[in-house]
Length: 271
Image 1 (cartoon, rainbow, N blue to C red):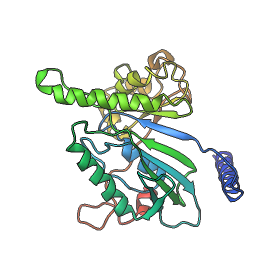
Image 2 (image 1 turned 180 degrees about the vertical axis):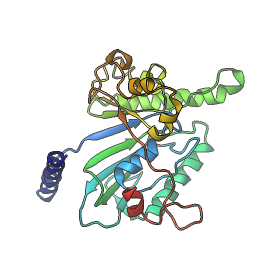
Image 3 (image 1 turned 180 degrees about the horizontal axis):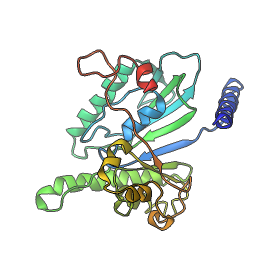
Image 4 (image 1 turned 45 degrees about the vertical axis):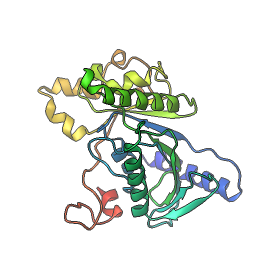
């Protein structure tokens, strides 16, 4: 663990030196793909160390959100700059509350339009003491509509979202973070979509979310063992890391209201 931390620190120092010398140094780009309610935004917030988006059931992300993160050990609170939709060379500093409000306003605007979603990314630059030097792209959640004519509108939206996400996955320089919210790997739905673009899962990391809620669903210890260490043939490819990763992100929001669980992002990070 200590060796990995030293490697991470060395990477951060190299990244910082490249920025000081204004020398190009590409950080890894991770594309987060999953169905609605799979916990995409919550996982992204866990990686960043602070909350910035609306999470919960239904559609909370109608435009891809690109987060260019920069590790800054002296930055005690997240410093965010929202890149202009009209001029990508211009970015305005915004508070976390303003970032949340902008994302929510875009969701509401798109909800009233016929397409309901947009491939144009919301781009945010972030500096924070808990941020890794990394680019994360949070995509709209895939939709699994019910069959039948009465659900044609939702089926149309599902097709549009899948097309949008598939187009993002076409970028071969992206590492795909494939989120699954399931207790049976043979029924994993997101992986089926990802494998249409990355059939061997050679640049895909499979992540099982909400592990804390998953374990009680198993009746036998052997079922848990198979879930945590699935046979290679079950995953249909040689995924990055050789096996799935498992996450459990703390629930509850940061704020001062009566329904808030954490008083600050530091409290959230500690959990």
